[in-house]
Image 1 (cartoon, rainbow over the protein chains, first blue to last red):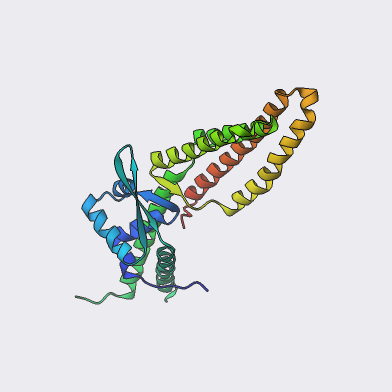
Image 2: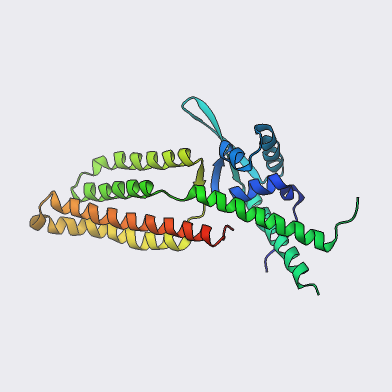
Length: 100
Length: 153
Protein backbone atom coordinates (compact mmCIF):
# COMPACT_ATOMS: atom_id res chain seq x y z
CA UNK A 1 0.00 0.00 0.00
CA UNK A 2 1.32 3.44 -0.92
CA UNK A 3 2.05 5.93 1.87
CA UNK A 4 0.12 9.19 1.73
CA UNK A 5 0.80 12.46 3.48
CA UNK A 6 -0.64 15.93 2.93
CA UNK A 7 2.37 18.22 2.87
CA UNK A 8 1.64 21.89 3.53
CA UNK A 9 5.11 22.94 2.37
CA UNK A 10 4.51 21.37 -1.05
CA UNK A 11 0.82 22.23 -1.40
CA UNK A 12 1.20 26.00 -1.93
CA UNK A 13 0.39 26.52 -5.66
CA UNK A 14 3.81 27.76 -6.78
CA UNK A 15 5.73 25.18 -4.76
CA UNK A 16 3.43 22.45 -6.02
CA UNK A 17 4.21 23.52 -9.59
CA UNK A 18 7.95 23.65 -8.88
CA UNK A 19 7.88 20.10 -7.49
CA UNK A 20 5.67 18.86 -10.35
CA UNK A 21 8.04 20.35 -12.93
CA UNK A 22 11.13 18.89 -11.27
CA UNK A 23 9.59 15.45 -10.62
CA UNK A 24 10.20 13.90 -14.08
CA UNK A 25 13.58 15.64 -14.44
CA UNK A 26 17.05 15.28 -13.06
CA UNK A 27 17.35 19.06 -12.73
CA UNK A 28 16.07 22.26 -14.31
CA UNK A 29 17.55 25.67 -14.75
CA UNK A 30 16.21 28.50 -12.59
CA UNK A 31 15.45 30.55 -15.73
CA UNK A 32 13.33 27.74 -17.19
CA UNK A 33 11.38 27.34 -13.94
CA UNK A 34 10.74 31.10 -13.84
CA UNK A 35 9.45 31.04 -17.43
CA UNK A 36 7.18 28.06 -16.89
CA UNK A 37 5.76 29.31 -13.62
CA UNK A 38 5.49 32.85 -14.95
CA UNK A 39 6.72 34.41 -11.73
CA UNK A 40 9.43 36.93 -10.84
CA UNK A 41 12.95 35.99 -9.77
CA UNK A 42 12.24 37.01 -6.18
CA UNK A 43 9.03 34.98 -5.93
CA UNK A 44 10.71 31.90 -7.36
CA UNK A 45 13.75 32.34 -5.09
CA UNK A 46 11.48 32.60 -2.05
CA UNK A 47 9.66 29.36 -2.89
CA UNK A 48 12.84 27.51 -3.79
CA UNK A 49 14.38 28.62 -0.49
CA UNK A 50 11.35 27.31 1.43
CA UNK A 51 11.60 23.98 -0.36
CA UNK A 52 15.33 23.94 0.27
CA UNK A 53 14.81 24.61 3.97
CA UNK A 54 12.44 21.66 4.10
CA UNK A 55 15.15 19.54 2.48
CA UNK A 56 13.06 18.95 -0.65
CA UNK A 57 15.09 20.86 -3.23
CA UNK A 58 18.77 21.46 -3.74
CA UNK A 59 20.46 24.04 -5.91
CA UNK A 60 23.62 23.85 -7.97
CA UNK A 61 25.43 26.79 -9.48
CA UNK A 62 27.50 26.61 -12.63
CA UNK A 63 29.29 29.25 -14.68
CA UNK A 64 28.79 29.22 -18.44
CA UNK A 65 30.54 31.85 -20.59
CA UNK A 66 31.21 33.94 -17.48
CA UNK A 67 27.52 33.92 -16.50
CA UNK A 68 26.28 32.10 -13.45
CA UNK A 69 23.44 29.67 -13.93
CA UNK A 70 21.46 28.03 -11.16
CA UNK A 71 20.00 24.56 -11.44
CA UNK A 72 17.39 23.12 -9.09
CA UNK A 73 16.54 19.51 -8.46
CA UNK A 74 14.39 17.49 -6.09
CA UNK A 75 16.24 15.65 -3.35
CA UNK A 76 15.40 12.04 -2.56
CA UNK A 77 13.40 13.24 0.47
CA UNK A 78 11.65 15.83 -1.70
CA UNK A 79 10.78 13.27 -4.34
CA UNK A 80 9.30 10.96 -1.73
CA UNK A 81 7.38 13.79 -0.05
CA UNK A 82 5.98 14.88 -3.41
CA UNK A 83 4.91 11.31 -4.30
CA UNK A 84 3.18 10.95 -0.93
CA UNK A 85 1.48 14.30 -1.38
CA UNK A 86 0.19 13.30 -4.82
CA UNK A 87 -1.10 10.02 -3.37
CA UNK A 88 -2.89 11.95 -0.63
CA UNK A 89 -4.50 14.26 -3.20
CA UNK A 90 -5.68 11.24 -5.20
CA UNK A 91 -7.03 9.67 -2.01
CA UNK A 92 -8.96 12.85 -1.20
CA UNK A 93 -10.53 12.93 -4.66
CA UNK A 94 -11.38 9.22 -4.53
CA UNK A 95 -12.81 9.51 -1.02
CA UNK A 96 -15.12 12.31 -2.10
CA UNK A 97 -16.27 10.61 -5.30
CA UNK A 98 -16.97 7.31 -3.48
CA UNK A 99 -19.11 9.10 -0.85
CA UNK A 100 -22.88 8.62 -1.41
CA UNK B 1 -12.63 31.64 8.64
CA UNK B 2 -15.18 29.04 7.52
CA UNK B 3 -14.07 25.43 7.85
CA UNK B 4 -13.21 23.56 4.67
CA UNK B 5 -15.81 20.96 3.76
CA UNK B 6 -14.97 17.56 2.30
CA UNK B 7 -16.28 18.81 -1.01
CA UNK B 8 -13.95 21.84 -0.87
CA UNK B 9 -10.99 19.61 0.01
CA UNK B 10 -11.77 17.28 -2.88
CA UNK B 11 -12.16 20.18 -5.32
CA UNK B 12 -8.88 21.66 -4.11
CA UNK B 13 -7.19 18.27 -4.48
CA UNK B 14 -8.63 17.82 -7.98
CA UNK B 15 -7.38 21.26 -9.00
CA UNK B 16 -3.94 20.54 -7.54
CA UNK B 17 -3.75 17.22 -9.41
CA UNK B 18 -4.64 18.94 -12.69
CA UNK B 19 -1.94 21.55 -12.06
CA UNK B 20 0.60 18.81 -11.29
CA UNK B 21 -0.26 16.94 -14.47
CA UNK B 22 0.05 20.10 -16.57
CA UNK B 23 3.47 20.95 -15.12
CA UNK B 24 4.76 17.41 -15.53
CA UNK B 25 3.66 17.48 -19.16
CA UNK B 26 5.45 20.79 -19.68
CA UNK B 27 8.62 19.36 -18.15
CA UNK B 28 8.41 16.24 -20.31
CA UNK B 29 7.84 18.34 -23.45
CA UNK B 30 11.07 20.19 -22.74
CA UNK B 31 12.88 16.90 -22.13
CA UNK B 32 11.94 15.21 -25.43
CA UNK B 33 15.21 14.27 -27.13
CA UNK B 34 15.47 15.98 -30.50
CA UNK B 35 16.24 14.09 -33.73
CA UNK B 36 19.59 15.84 -34.10
CA UNK B 37 20.57 14.72 -30.61
CA UNK B 38 19.80 11.07 -31.41
CA UNK B 39 21.61 11.36 -34.74
CA UNK B 40 24.71 12.97 -33.17
CA UNK B 41 25.00 10.33 -30.47
CA UNK B 42 24.41 7.60 -33.09
CA UNK B 43 27.19 8.90 -35.36
CA UNK B 44 29.59 9.18 -32.43
CA UNK B 45 28.73 5.68 -31.17
CA UNK B 46 29.31 4.41 -34.71
CA UNK B 47 32.66 6.21 -34.76
CA UNK B 48 33.65 4.37 -31.57
CA UNK B 49 33.04 1.00 -33.24
CA UNK B 50 34.77 2.05 -36.44
CA UNK B 51 37.84 3.21 -34.50
CA UNK B 52 37.91 0.04 -32.38
CA UNK B 53 37.54 -2.20 -35.43
CA UNK B 54 40.24 -0.27 -37.28
CA UNK B 55 42.50 -0.60 -34.21
CA UNK B 56 42.61 3.15 -33.69
CA UNK B 57 41.62 3.14 -30.01
CA UNK B 58 43.85 6.15 -29.25
CA UNK B 59 41.12 8.35 -30.80
CA UNK B 60 38.37 7.03 -28.48
CA UNK B 61 38.97 9.80 -25.99
CA UNK B 62 38.07 12.49 -28.58
CA UNK B 63 34.85 10.74 -29.50
CA UNK B 64 33.91 10.37 -25.82
CA UNK B 65 34.69 14.04 -25.23
CA UNK B 66 32.50 14.98 -28.19
CA UNK B 67 29.66 12.82 -26.80
CA UNK B 68 29.92 14.63 -23.46
CA UNK B 69 29.94 17.99 -25.27
CA UNK B 70 26.76 17.07 -27.18
CA UNK B 71 25.03 16.06 -23.93
CA UNK B 72 26.13 19.23 -22.11
CA UNK B 73 25.04 21.38 -25.07
CA UNK B 74 21.64 19.72 -25.08
CA UNK B 75 21.04 20.25 -21.37
CA UNK B 76 22.18 23.90 -21.64
CA UNK B 77 19.94 24.51 -24.62
CA UNK B 78 16.82 22.95 -23.12
CA UNK B 79 17.54 24.10 -19.56
CA UNK B 80 16.55 20.69 -18.22
CA UNK B 81 18.15 17.31 -17.89
CA UNK B 82 16.08 14.17 -18.01
CA UNK B 83 15.78 11.84 -15.07
CA UNK B 84 13.33 9.15 -15.99
CA UNK B 85 14.89 6.96 -18.58
CA UNK B 86 12.42 4.22 -19.25
CA UNK B 87 13.84 1.14 -17.55
CA UNK B 88 12.62 -1.03 -20.39
CA UNK B 89 14.38 1.07 -23.03
CA UNK B 90 17.55 1.19 -20.96
CA UNK B 91 17.38 -2.61 -20.58
CA UNK B 92 16.81 -3.16 -24.30
CA UNK B 93 19.59 -0.71 -25.11
CA UNK B 94 22.03 -2.56 -22.89
CA UNK B 95 20.99 -6.04 -24.08
CA UNK B 96 21.13 -5.04 -27.75
CA UNK B 97 24.00 -2.57 -27.86
CA UNK B 98 26.64 -4.13 -25.62
CA UNK B 99 26.89 -7.48 -27.52
CA UNK B 100 26.36 -5.67 -30.83
CA UNK B 101 29.26 -3.32 -30.07
CA UNK B 102 31.73 -6.14 -29.43
CA UNK B 103 30.18 -8.44 -32.04
CA UNK B 104 30.64 -5.81 -34.73
CA UNK B 105 34.29 -5.30 -33.81
CA UNK B 106 34.94 -9.04 -34.04
CA UNK B 107 32.93 -9.36 -37.28
CA UNK B 108 34.72 -6.40 -38.80
CA UNK B 109 38.11 -7.91 -38.06
CA UNK B 110 36.96 -11.25 -39.52
CA UNK B 111 35.59 -9.70 -42.69
CA UNK B 112 38.34 -7.14 -43.20
CA UNK B 113 40.06 -9.44 -45.73
CA UNK B 114 36.91 -9.74 -47.80
CA UNK B 115 35.54 -6.16 -47.51
CA UNK B 116 38.79 -4.32 -46.88
CA UNK B 117 40.47 -2.78 -43.85
CA UNK B 118 38.57 0.47 -44.34
CA UNK B 119 35.23 -0.88 -45.55
CA UNK B 120 34.73 -3.43 -42.75
CA UNK B 121 35.19 -1.01 -39.80
CA UNK B 122 33.07 1.58 -41.62
CA UNK B 123 30.27 -0.93 -42.21
CA UNK B 124 30.43 -1.95 -38.53
CA UNK B 125 30.17 1.71 -37.50
CA UNK B 126 27.18 2.29 -39.78
CA UNK B 127 25.36 -0.75 -38.35
CA UNK B 128 25.87 0.43 -34.76
CA UNK B 129 24.99 4.04 -35.60
CA UNK B 130 21.73 2.83 -37.18
CA UNK B 131 20.90 0.74 -34.10
CA UNK B 132 21.60 3.68 -31.74
CA UNK B 133 19.54 6.03 -33.92
CA UNK B 134 16.60 3.60 -33.92
CA UNK B 135 16.77 3.33 -30.13
CA UNK B 136 16.87 7.11 -29.78
CA UNK B 137 13.76 7.39 -31.96
CA UNK B 138 12.11 4.73 -29.79
CA UNK B 139 12.92 6.80 -26.70
CA UNK B 140 11.55 9.94 -28.39
CA UNK B 141 8.33 8.15 -29.25
CA UNK B 142 8.09 6.86 -25.67
CA UNK B 143 8.28 10.44 -24.39
CA UNK B 144 5.67 11.67 -26.85
CA UNK B 145 3.30 8.82 -25.99
CA UNK B 146 3.77 9.53 -22.30
CA UNK B 147 2.90 13.18 -22.77
CA UNK B 148 -0.09 12.29 -24.95
CA UNK B 149 -1.46 9.87 -22.40
CA UNK B 150 -1.08 12.50 -19.69
CA UNK B 151 1.02 10.14 -17.63
CA UNK B 152 3.43 12.58 -16.13
CA UNK B 153 3.99 10.95 -12.77
